[in-house]
Length: 105
Ligand SMILES: [Zn+2]
Image (tube, rainbow, N blue to C red; front, top):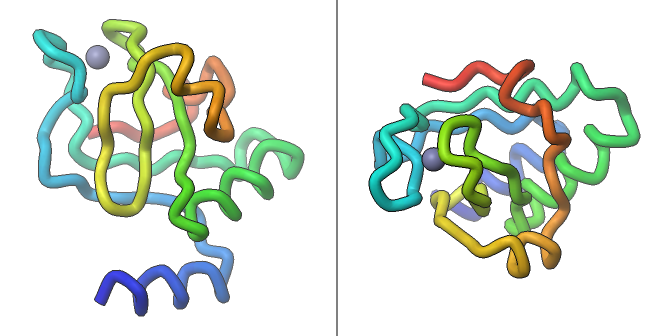
């Protein structure tokens, strides 16, 4: 199911939007709601959109900071997890203002 979803998304270059099982930010003691995210990468232009969409569907995912606690989060198709600033450098990164454009529920 996962592989099928991933292949279909990559072929259609679908915009990343996701519903996670965990309802909030993965950082401890942060209650920022973060269950469903429409990243709206198309609003940031192709230089941002294209590599991040590719990383999403390749299962690499991308890193971005929580709008409430500022902690780095690794977002993938499978889940989201808290990471350190050092770890965030290993992944493609969302623009600083990603949460201003995204729909986060
Ligand atoms: Zn947070």
